Image 1 (cartoon, rainbow, N blue to C red):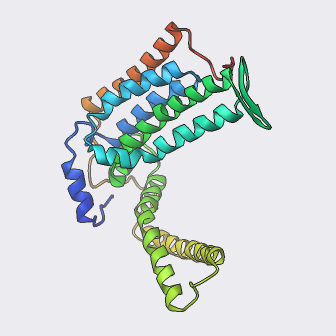
Image 2: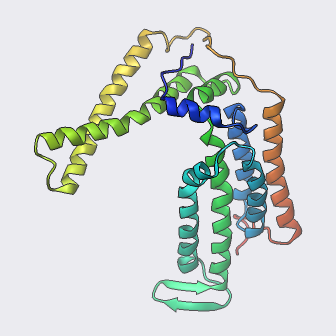
Length: 272
């Protein structure tokens, strides 16, 4: 049995506005496509394979159904992390070839710059599809797919779904705790002490809510050993297989181009 809670009107409207052909596919297919794209890129550190995959991903993103504003807002952490990681690698990465700058622990060399460029594209090529493909995933749809398509244990799936549904309550709980402490006059000074106290209170509140939810789910038969029925069927058809094929093709093309250009740099067997 699986149910959908009451959702905010804005989220429902946002989901209806997405017209991309990928937006309404089975979440398991999106999970598999992201894995098929990222798995080959984990095996190598070179900018050619990552840049090739990123170029092909840009075409795939056009069919997800996100507006440009939502795309940039959702992926902003990846765009921030990629250059920061590249700068760190450029300054402190393994030095090789010509040394361009050196000061204390900082050593900028030809090898570290090459590794930084590869890392920059690698973070984008692996992180962007993982974020973009999951923006349109509904937690209930994902749970249905994991249980019915991948045949994962229902206790694990429903427990994860309950946890994901309650994540949004943490923000409301944090705001309520802040207002309560301010009303009692204990939130005017000592910022670090206040944050630690609120974090501990939020942890206690979360544990209590989790215990009550677990008891309620057990009472309703969510922990039973009988064959479970599901309110909605999770379909996995030709469109989902096509998305998986596209993900596999992107990874294969990226590897092929990297090997053909001599840029393949196996992460366990070679150096930059």
